[in-house]
Image (cartoon, rainbow, N blue to C red; front, top):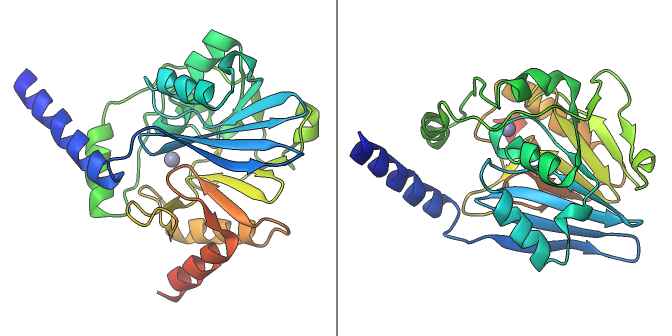
Length: 262
Ligand SMILES: [Zn+2]
């Protein structure tokens, strides 16, 4: 049994290493202006973004369960004290986006914000039906079976029908936009010229900055329509997905035209 388990873990590790280009944990600076600093922390190809503005700090998404120490190490390397982060906004409740939220909430008192309609996913530790969109995705789903993250409660649940939240309420600038589709309670976060889109789309596993259909998507047409809505917003130039990326809005337009044309 253990031997079988060990082989499975090794196989998954090799596959993930191939898919992620064998990269280690990484920091990328997205913006460093007079207004704000935005840093991307990449652990196992699950992006966590930290935005610093007006002495406030906000993280977007929380990666996989068990990776909290790796994210905290990257934060410290980037000059960010995890204890000084005020908020964590979850783009959605899947395991690779909400996995360390319980830990950040308990360790540092970070206020966790997410979509009201993802609360049942969060209560289940992220264990939900996934709809694979490719062969690799079907395999990934097998490896995820039975995986759960430590359950937590949202400190603030955003209603899906409403206009969302102006980040001025949190002392920062930007907007949290309810954007159901990938999950019922998915959110897109708009800050300056940037859109943080969770799993609305992803970067390629090899061509990381090429927009690609996400591994798990239950309604592809609905997903295309939702991508079109974000593309139609004024002033958004750069897209930051949960996995790989980033890419310019223009590249997403090219991707969408090709997908709809197929
Ligand atoms: Zn997801």
